[in-house]
Length: 370
Image (cartoon, rainbow, N blue to C red; front, side, top):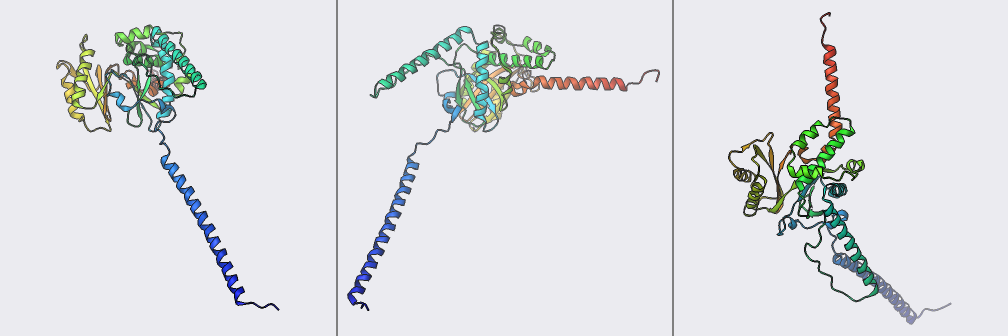
């Protein structure tokens, strides 16, 4: 029989205390490690570079200030689309405008753009080869301003459901370009559904001379596939814009006077109307601005809100104003390209309905013998 002494009991208690201490130390070490991991994760999350708001096709956007903070006359197309569908709309529009640019831009302009793109591609390849051969840091080359022109560039409007397609090439008028695009779509959609194109001929007769010239000189060998048009689902209007500026009376009124003077320098309009829309802006009062702009026009020219000969477009978007003066505005469906693509189908349906109504009324008319 073994006897337990006081010393054995003390030793046993000391051993248990040591084990408990080591266990608690292990737990504290584990908790400290987990806290360190959490801290590192939190630190890495907080120090992570914030993602750009422009993803995918938005990556090439110019800033909103490009619409007014520049000495260059910014002109192009103001595109509206379904809310939160800007990326889809860009994917629809860029192939379309590039194909029509091949068709209606002067050949020398397209040739220059193609040469510039090839040169920039060669420079990019040479830069890649140089970087692979050396590991030293080099300062980036500063490009000469206005050395090259792209046919189109995207500008952030600062407002959802709308963006701007800039046309930097100086000699290309966005009004002429958009007139040619829409009348071409109008005609091909009517022919596709075997409808008369007389309405297209009537609109062409009202074209500005510069638009007629661009349309007649278009390269008819350029093929526009139907799938490019059928792809357009999210894009609504493509309104041509000739001038942009900061959204203030001081900046906008002189610009508007210049636009009116330039447009009506050699012609005498019969009537005009004003369409003004304001988005995310409170600096320009809509009613006051419309009255002030109307006062800039010759008093002999009457205001016609139902069917004006010319429509003044004033789009106030955040800190900028985009404006232009358009003819044949309603004839081209207010520059709504989505509606224009459906015009052939709608015309055929309307004609079918009219023919059916005529047949029914004829059948219902009693003869003399009856």
